[in-house]
Length: 261
Length: 161
Image 1 (tube, rainbow over the protein chains, first blue to last red):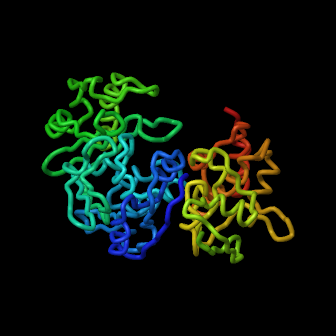
Image 2: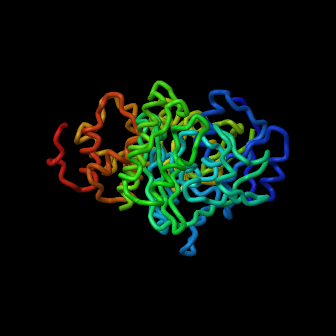
Image 3: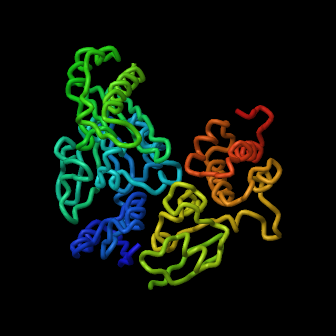
Protein backbone atom coordinates (compact mmCIF):
# COMPACT_ATOMS: atom_id res chain seq x y z
CA UNK A 1 0.00 0.00 0.00
CA UNK A 2 1.01 3.61 -0.40
CA UNK A 3 2.62 5.09 2.66
CA UNK A 4 0.83 7.50 4.96
CA UNK A 5 1.23 9.23 8.26
CA UNK A 6 -0.24 7.31 11.21
CA UNK A 7 -1.61 9.06 14.29
CA UNK A 8 -3.44 7.59 17.26
CA UNK A 9 -5.15 10.31 19.29
CA UNK A 10 -6.48 9.70 22.79
CA UNK A 11 -9.61 11.85 22.55
CA UNK A 12 -12.41 12.47 20.06
CA UNK A 13 -11.48 16.16 19.84
CA UNK A 14 -7.91 15.31 18.87
CA UNK A 15 -9.17 12.84 16.28
CA UNK A 16 -11.49 15.43 14.73
CA UNK A 17 -8.65 17.94 14.59
CA UNK A 18 -6.39 15.39 12.89
CA UNK A 19 -9.11 14.53 10.38
CA UNK A 20 -9.33 18.14 9.18
CA UNK A 21 -6.23 17.58 7.07
CA UNK A 22 -6.95 16.95 3.41
CA UNK A 23 -7.11 13.22 2.55
CA UNK A 24 -7.00 12.20 6.19
CA UNK A 25 -9.07 9.11 6.93
CA UNK A 26 -10.39 7.63 10.15
CA UNK A 27 -9.27 4.05 10.91
CA UNK A 28 -11.54 1.78 12.93
CA UNK A 29 -10.47 -1.86 13.10
CA UNK A 30 -9.10 -1.70 9.58
CA UNK A 31 -10.64 -4.98 8.48
CA UNK A 32 -12.01 -3.37 5.32
CA UNK A 33 -9.86 -0.26 4.98
CA UNK A 34 -6.47 -2.00 5.16
CA UNK A 35 -7.33 -4.58 2.44
CA UNK A 36 -8.69 -1.71 0.35
CA UNK A 37 -5.46 0.22 0.79
CA UNK A 38 -3.39 -2.84 -0.05
CA UNK A 39 -5.18 -2.94 -3.38
CA UNK A 40 -4.39 0.76 -3.78
CA UNK A 41 -8.09 1.54 -4.05
CA UNK A 42 -7.65 4.11 -1.29
CA UNK A 43 -4.63 6.28 -0.62
CA UNK A 44 -5.18 8.51 2.41
CA UNK A 45 -2.34 10.83 3.35
CA UNK A 46 -2.98 10.26 7.01
CA UNK A 47 -4.71 7.54 8.99
CA UNK A 48 -6.30 8.61 12.25
CA UNK A 49 -6.70 5.53 14.43
CA UNK A 50 -9.75 5.58 16.67
CA UNK A 51 -8.37 2.61 18.60
CA UNK A 52 -6.77 4.71 21.30
CA UNK A 53 -9.92 6.52 22.41
CA UNK A 54 -11.23 4.65 25.45
CA UNK A 55 -14.52 6.59 25.44
CA UNK A 56 -15.49 5.03 22.12
CA UNK A 57 -15.51 1.44 23.36
CA UNK A 58 -18.28 -0.09 25.41
CA UNK A 59 -21.72 -1.66 25.60
CA UNK A 60 -24.39 -0.32 27.94
CA UNK A 61 -28.10 -0.75 28.37
CA UNK A 62 -30.83 1.00 30.35
CA UNK A 63 -33.36 -1.70 29.53
CA UNK A 64 -35.03 0.25 26.71
CA UNK A 65 -31.95 1.17 24.67
CA UNK A 66 -28.68 -0.58 24.00
CA UNK A 67 -25.80 1.79 23.32
CA UNK A 68 -22.58 0.76 21.60
CA UNK A 69 -19.47 2.92 21.55
CA UNK A 70 -18.47 3.62 17.95
CA UNK A 71 -15.16 1.76 18.19
CA UNK A 72 -16.55 -1.29 19.98
CA UNK A 73 -15.26 -4.48 18.32
CA UNK A 74 -17.76 -7.07 17.10
CA UNK A 75 -16.45 -9.63 19.60
CA UNK A 76 -17.18 -7.28 22.51
CA UNK A 77 -20.72 -6.71 21.22
CA UNK A 78 -21.20 -10.46 20.78
CA UNK A 79 -20.29 -11.18 24.39
CA UNK A 80 -21.72 -8.07 26.10
CA UNK A 81 -24.92 -7.15 24.28
CA UNK A 82 -27.08 -9.69 26.10
CA UNK A 83 -29.78 -7.04 26.52
CA UNK A 84 -30.36 -7.27 22.75
CA UNK A 85 -29.72 -10.94 21.90
CA UNK A 86 -30.37 -10.68 18.15
CA UNK A 87 -27.79 -7.90 17.89
CA UNK A 88 -25.25 -9.90 19.90
CA UNK A 89 -25.85 -12.89 17.62
CA UNK A 90 -25.38 -10.73 14.52
CA UNK A 91 -22.07 -9.40 15.85
CA UNK A 92 -20.94 -12.93 16.68
CA UNK A 93 -21.57 -14.06 13.12
CA UNK A 94 -19.51 -11.42 11.31
CA UNK A 95 -16.40 -12.68 9.53
CA UNK A 96 -14.34 -14.95 11.77
CA UNK A 97 -13.06 -14.68 15.36
CA UNK A 98 -9.91 -12.73 14.48
CA UNK A 99 -11.85 -10.29 12.31
CA UNK A 100 -14.39 -9.81 15.11
CA UNK A 101 -11.60 -8.89 17.52
CA UNK A 102 -10.58 -5.95 15.32
CA UNK A 103 -13.59 -4.84 13.27
CA UNK A 104 -15.86 -2.23 14.87
CA UNK A 105 -19.53 -1.30 14.68
CA UNK A 106 -18.73 2.28 13.74
CA UNK A 107 -16.37 1.16 11.02
CA UNK A 108 -19.00 -1.12 9.54
CA UNK A 109 -21.69 1.58 9.57
CA UNK A 110 -19.36 4.26 8.22
CA UNK A 111 -18.32 2.01 5.35
CA UNK A 112 -21.90 0.86 4.60
CA UNK A 113 -20.88 -2.11 2.52
CA UNK A 114 -24.04 -3.33 0.76
CA UNK A 115 -23.41 -6.85 2.13
CA UNK A 116 -22.40 -5.91 5.68
CA UNK A 117 -24.49 -7.16 8.61
CA UNK A 118 -24.66 -4.13 10.93
CA UNK A 119 -26.55 -1.79 8.58
CA UNK A 120 -29.53 -4.17 8.65
CA UNK A 121 -29.59 -4.15 12.45
CA UNK A 122 -29.35 -0.37 12.62
CA UNK A 123 -32.10 0.14 10.06
CA UNK A 124 -34.44 -2.54 11.42
CA UNK A 125 -34.00 -1.19 14.95
CA UNK A 126 -34.55 2.42 14.00
CA UNK A 127 -31.18 3.08 15.61
CA UNK A 128 -29.67 6.50 16.16
CA UNK A 129 -26.17 7.05 14.83
CA UNK A 130 -24.41 9.48 17.15
CA UNK A 131 -21.43 11.40 15.76
CA UNK A 132 -19.08 14.00 17.16
CA UNK A 133 -21.40 16.64 15.69
CA UNK A 134 -25.00 15.37 15.74
CA UNK A 135 -27.45 12.50 15.91
CA UNK A 136 -28.69 10.84 12.72
CA UNK A 137 -31.72 8.54 12.46
CA UNK A 138 -30.91 5.27 10.68
CA UNK A 139 -33.70 6.01 8.18
CA UNK A 140 -31.76 9.11 7.08
CA UNK A 141 -28.28 7.68 7.48
CA UNK A 142 -27.94 5.03 4.75
CA UNK A 143 -27.73 6.68 1.33
CA UNK A 144 -26.74 3.96 -1.11
CA UNK A 145 -23.71 1.78 -1.77
CA UNK A 146 -20.84 2.76 0.51
CA UNK A 147 -22.61 6.07 1.02
CA UNK A 148 -23.89 7.59 4.25
CA UNK A 149 -25.01 10.88 5.74
CA UNK A 150 -21.61 11.33 7.40
CA UNK A 151 -19.68 14.43 6.40
CA UNK A 152 -15.96 14.50 5.75
CA UNK A 153 -14.09 14.13 8.99
CA UNK A 154 -17.20 13.21 10.98
CA UNK A 155 -16.89 10.09 13.13
CA UNK A 156 -19.42 7.78 14.75
CA UNK A 157 -19.02 8.00 18.50
CA UNK A 158 -21.96 5.77 19.50
CA UNK A 159 -24.95 3.91 18.15
CA UNK A 160 -28.19 3.67 20.12
CA UNK A 161 -30.46 0.70 19.42
CA UNK A 162 -34.02 0.70 20.84
CA UNK A 163 -34.45 -2.83 22.21
CA UNK A 164 -37.31 -4.66 20.46
CA UNK A 165 -39.79 -7.07 21.99
CA UNK A 166 -38.55 -9.78 19.66
CA UNK A 167 -35.96 -9.79 16.91
CA UNK A 168 -33.87 -12.10 14.79
CA UNK A 169 -31.24 -11.85 12.08
CA UNK A 170 -30.91 -14.49 9.40
CA UNK A 171 -27.86 -14.41 7.16
CA UNK A 172 -27.45 -16.51 4.05
CA UNK A 173 -23.71 -16.46 4.02
CA UNK A 174 -21.46 -16.13 1.01
CA UNK A 175 -19.18 -18.91 2.23
CA UNK A 176 -15.85 -17.51 1.05
CA UNK A 177 -16.21 -13.94 2.30
CA UNK A 178 -18.73 -14.66 5.07
CA UNK A 179 -20.52 -11.46 4.09
CA UNK A 180 -24.27 -11.73 3.64
CA UNK A 181 -25.38 -12.97 0.23
CA UNK A 182 -28.70 -11.96 1.75
CA UNK A 183 -29.32 -10.98 5.35
CA UNK A 184 -32.68 -10.05 6.88
CA UNK A 185 -33.13 -8.42 10.27
CA UNK A 186 -36.67 -8.52 11.68
CA UNK A 187 -37.52 -6.53 14.82
CA UNK A 188 -40.90 -6.32 16.51
CA UNK A 189 -41.69 -3.18 18.53
CA UNK A 190 -44.84 -2.13 20.32
CA UNK A 191 -45.72 0.17 17.41
CA UNK A 192 -44.98 -2.31 14.63
CA UNK A 193 -42.48 -4.55 12.89
CA UNK A 194 -39.43 -3.34 11.00
CA UNK A 195 -37.67 -5.47 8.37
CA UNK A 196 -34.29 -4.49 6.93
CA UNK A 197 -32.47 -6.34 4.16
CA UNK A 198 -28.75 -6.35 3.46
CA UNK A 199 -26.71 -8.01 0.73
CA UNK A 200 -29.51 -7.81 -1.81
CA UNK A 201 -30.53 -4.29 -2.77
CA UNK A 202 -28.93 -2.45 -5.68
CA UNK A 203 -28.84 0.63 -3.46
CA UNK A 204 -27.61 -1.15 -0.36
CA UNK A 205 -29.54 -1.88 2.82
CA UNK A 206 -33.29 -1.23 2.57
CA UNK A 207 -36.52 -1.65 4.51
CA UNK A 208 -39.03 -4.09 3.05
CA UNK A 209 -42.12 -2.04 3.78
CA UNK A 210 -44.67 -4.56 2.41
CA UNK A 211 -43.31 -7.22 4.75
CA UNK A 212 -43.35 -4.75 7.63
CA UNK A 213 -47.05 -4.04 7.04
CA UNK A 214 -47.90 -7.73 6.73
CA UNK A 215 -45.92 -8.72 9.81
CA UNK A 216 -47.29 -5.85 11.86
CA UNK A 217 -50.72 -7.37 11.19
CA UNK A 218 -49.72 -10.98 11.84
CA UNK A 219 -46.27 -11.81 13.14
CA UNK A 220 -46.06 -15.24 11.53
CA UNK A 221 -43.87 -16.60 8.70
CA UNK A 222 -46.96 -17.17 6.56
CA UNK A 223 -47.80 -13.46 6.63
CA UNK A 224 -45.28 -12.74 3.85
CA UNK A 225 -46.34 -15.65 1.62
CA UNK A 226 -48.25 -13.46 -0.80
CA UNK A 227 -45.46 -10.89 -1.16
CA UNK A 228 -42.68 -10.81 -3.70
CA UNK A 229 -39.77 -8.58 -4.58
CA UNK A 230 -38.47 -7.81 -8.06
CA UNK A 231 -35.11 -9.27 -9.01
CA UNK A 232 -34.54 -6.12 -11.08
CA UNK A 233 -33.94 -4.15 -7.89
CA UNK A 234 -31.45 -6.71 -6.53
CA UNK A 235 -27.74 -7.17 -6.89
CA UNK A 236 -26.85 -9.76 -9.50
CA UNK A 237 -23.31 -11.13 -9.56
CA UNK A 238 -21.44 -14.40 -9.95
CA UNK A 239 -22.68 -15.53 -6.53
CA UNK A 240 -26.37 -15.17 -7.38
CA UNK A 241 -28.77 -13.47 -9.78
CA UNK A 242 -31.11 -10.70 -8.76
CA UNK A 243 -34.05 -13.10 -8.94
CA UNK A 244 -32.23 -15.56 -6.67
CA UNK A 245 -31.56 -12.85 -4.12
CA UNK A 246 -35.17 -11.62 -4.29
CA UNK A 247 -36.31 -15.15 -3.51
CA UNK A 248 -33.80 -15.46 -0.67
CA UNK A 249 -35.03 -12.24 0.95
CA UNK A 250 -38.44 -13.80 1.45
CA UNK A 251 -37.00 -17.10 2.66
CA UNK A 252 -34.72 -15.36 5.16
CA UNK A 253 -37.58 -13.14 6.34
CA UNK A 254 -39.74 -16.18 7.03
CA UNK A 255 -36.89 -17.88 8.87
CA UNK A 256 -36.26 -14.79 10.99
CA UNK A 257 -39.92 -14.52 11.97
CA UNK A 258 -40.05 -18.26 12.70
CA UNK A 259 -36.99 -17.91 14.93
CA UNK A 260 -38.72 -15.11 16.88
CA UNK A 261 -41.81 -17.20 17.57
CA UNK B 1 9.88 5.92 10.21
CA UNK B 2 8.74 5.85 13.78
CA UNK B 3 10.18 3.76 16.56
CA UNK B 4 7.63 1.41 18.06
CA UNK B 5 7.96 -0.88 21.05
CA UNK B 6 5.93 -3.88 22.05
CA UNK B 7 6.20 -6.87 24.33
CA UNK B 8 6.60 -9.96 22.17
CA UNK B 9 6.45 -13.34 23.90
CA UNK B 10 7.31 -11.66 27.18
CA UNK B 11 10.30 -9.65 25.92
CA UNK B 12 10.39 -5.95 25.12
CA UNK B 13 11.18 -5.47 21.43
CA UNK B 14 11.61 -2.24 19.49
CA UNK B 15 12.08 -1.33 15.86
CA UNK B 16 11.37 1.25 13.20
CA UNK B 17 8.11 1.12 11.28
CA UNK B 18 6.49 3.18 8.56
CA UNK B 19 2.83 4.06 8.88
CA UNK B 20 2.01 1.31 6.41
CA UNK B 21 4.15 -1.39 8.03
CA UNK B 22 1.91 -4.31 8.88
CA UNK B 23 2.26 -6.10 12.19
CA UNK B 24 3.23 -9.30 10.38
CA UNK B 25 5.98 -7.46 8.48
CA UNK B 26 7.27 -5.98 11.71
CA UNK B 27 7.32 -9.40 13.39
CA UNK B 28 8.95 -11.19 10.46
CA UNK B 29 11.22 -8.61 8.85
CA UNK B 30 12.13 -6.32 11.73
CA UNK B 31 12.14 -8.73 14.65
CA UNK B 32 13.08 -11.86 12.67
CA UNK B 33 10.17 -13.88 14.04
CA UNK B 34 9.37 -15.76 10.85
CA UNK B 35 7.17 -18.39 12.48
CA UNK B 36 4.15 -16.20 11.76
CA UNK B 37 3.32 -16.78 8.11
CA UNK B 38 1.82 -14.65 5.36
CA UNK B 39 -0.51 -16.81 3.32
CA UNK B 40 -3.09 -14.74 1.48
CA UNK B 41 -2.28 -11.23 2.72
CA UNK B 42 -6.02 -10.50 2.47
CA UNK B 43 -7.18 -11.61 5.96
CA UNK B 44 -8.82 -14.75 4.61
CA UNK B 45 -6.43 -17.56 5.47
CA UNK B 46 -5.35 -17.03 9.08
CA UNK B 47 -1.73 -18.19 8.66
CA UNK B 48 -0.72 -14.87 10.26
CA UNK B 49 -2.84 -15.14 13.43
CA UNK B 50 -1.09 -13.83 16.55
CA UNK B 51 -2.47 -12.61 19.86
CA UNK B 52 -2.52 -8.88 20.64
CA UNK B 53 -3.39 -8.11 24.25
CA UNK B 54 -4.73 -11.65 24.52
CA UNK B 55 -6.99 -11.50 21.45
CA UNK B 56 -6.43 -13.40 18.21
CA UNK B 57 -5.91 -11.06 15.28
CA UNK B 58 -4.78 -11.39 11.69
CA UNK B 59 -1.43 -9.67 11.74
CA UNK B 60 -1.55 -9.02 7.98
CA UNK B 61 -4.54 -6.76 8.59
CA UNK B 62 -3.29 -4.74 11.52
CA UNK B 63 -0.76 -1.95 11.36
CA UNK B 64 2.39 -2.42 13.40
CA UNK B 65 1.85 1.08 14.80
CA UNK B 66 -1.51 -0.05 16.20
CA UNK B 67 0.36 -2.62 18.28
CA UNK B 68 2.76 -0.04 19.71
CA UNK B 69 2.79 -0.69 23.46
CA UNK B 70 0.80 -3.92 23.13
CA UNK B 71 1.46 -7.39 24.49
CA UNK B 72 1.94 -9.69 21.50
CA UNK B 73 2.18 -13.49 21.49
CA UNK B 74 3.39 -15.44 18.47
CA UNK B 75 3.99 -19.07 17.66
CA UNK B 76 7.60 -18.69 18.83
CA UNK B 77 6.35 -18.12 22.37
CA UNK B 78 4.24 -21.26 22.57
CA UNK B 79 6.85 -23.89 23.34
CA UNK B 80 8.86 -23.83 26.58
CA UNK B 81 12.31 -22.23 26.43
CA UNK B 82 13.90 -25.70 26.27
CA UNK B 83 11.84 -26.53 23.20
CA UNK B 84 9.22 -28.67 24.92
CA UNK B 85 6.02 -28.27 22.94
CA UNK B 86 2.92 -26.98 24.67
CA UNK B 87 -0.20 -29.13 24.87
CA UNK B 88 -1.67 -27.80 21.62
CA UNK B 89 1.54 -28.19 19.65
CA UNK B 90 2.08 -31.70 21.02
CA UNK B 91 -1.48 -32.65 20.13
CA UNK B 92 -0.96 -31.41 16.56
CA UNK B 93 2.08 -33.70 16.35
CA UNK B 94 0.34 -36.67 17.98
CA UNK B 95 -2.75 -36.42 15.76
CA UNK B 96 -1.01 -35.45 12.52
CA UNK B 97 -2.68 -32.07 12.56
CA UNK B 98 -0.47 -30.83 9.75
CA UNK B 99 0.87 -31.90 6.41
CA UNK B 100 2.90 -29.09 4.83
CA UNK B 101 2.72 -27.04 8.02
CA UNK B 102 2.24 -23.65 6.40
CA UNK B 103 -1.08 -22.92 8.12
CA UNK B 104 0.02 -24.46 11.41
CA UNK B 105 1.27 -21.33 13.23
CA UNK B 106 -2.10 -19.68 12.68
CA UNK B 107 -4.00 -22.84 13.54
CA UNK B 108 -2.12 -23.22 16.82
CA UNK B 109 -2.62 -19.57 17.74
CA UNK B 110 -6.33 -19.71 16.91
CA UNK B 111 -6.66 -22.92 18.89
CA UNK B 112 -4.93 -21.28 21.85
CA UNK B 113 -7.35 -18.35 21.68
CA UNK B 114 -10.32 -20.71 21.53
CA UNK B 115 -9.22 -22.83 24.47
CA UNK B 116 -8.53 -19.78 26.58
CA UNK B 117 -12.18 -18.69 26.27
CA UNK B 118 -13.70 -22.15 25.96
CA UNK B 119 -11.56 -24.85 27.62
CA UNK B 120 -13.78 -27.76 26.50
CA UNK B 121 -15.17 -26.87 23.07
CA UNK B 122 -17.36 -29.27 21.14
CA UNK B 123 -16.30 -30.47 17.71
CA UNK B 124 -18.84 -28.08 16.18
CA UNK B 125 -17.50 -25.16 18.17
CA UNK B 126 -13.94 -25.95 17.07
CA UNK B 127 -14.91 -26.14 13.40
CA UNK B 128 -16.87 -22.90 13.71
CA UNK B 129 -14.00 -21.12 15.45
CA UNK B 130 -11.54 -22.14 12.74
CA UNK B 131 -13.61 -20.56 9.95
CA UNK B 132 -10.93 -17.93 9.50
CA UNK B 133 -8.07 -20.42 9.20
CA UNK B 134 -7.58 -22.16 5.88
CA UNK B 135 -5.55 -25.36 5.42
CA UNK B 136 -4.92 -26.15 1.76
CA UNK B 137 -3.73 -29.68 2.56
CA UNK B 138 -7.33 -30.12 3.75
CA UNK B 139 -6.10 -31.37 7.07
CA UNK B 140 -9.01 -29.98 9.06
CA UNK B 141 -10.10 -33.31 10.40
CA UNK B 142 -6.90 -34.02 12.25
CA UNK B 143 -6.60 -30.40 13.32
CA UNK B 144 -9.99 -30.67 15.00
CA UNK B 145 -8.90 -33.93 16.61
CA UNK B 146 -5.72 -32.29 17.88
CA UNK B 147 -7.64 -29.44 19.47
CA UNK B 148 -10.09 -31.86 21.07
CA UNK B 149 -7.14 -33.81 22.46
CA UNK B 150 -5.35 -30.67 23.63
CA UNK B 151 -8.46 -29.77 25.63
CA UNK B 152 -8.34 -33.17 27.32
CA UNK B 153 -11.31 -34.62 25.46
CA UNK B 154 -11.80 -37.98 23.79
CA UNK B 155 -11.16 -37.85 20.05
CA UNK B 156 -12.50 -41.32 19.34
CA UNK B 157 -15.96 -40.00 18.61
CA UNK B 158 -14.79 -37.88 15.68
CA UNK B 159 -15.32 -39.86 12.52
CA UNK B 160 -14.37 -38.86 9.02
CA UNK B 161 -17.30 -37.37 7.17
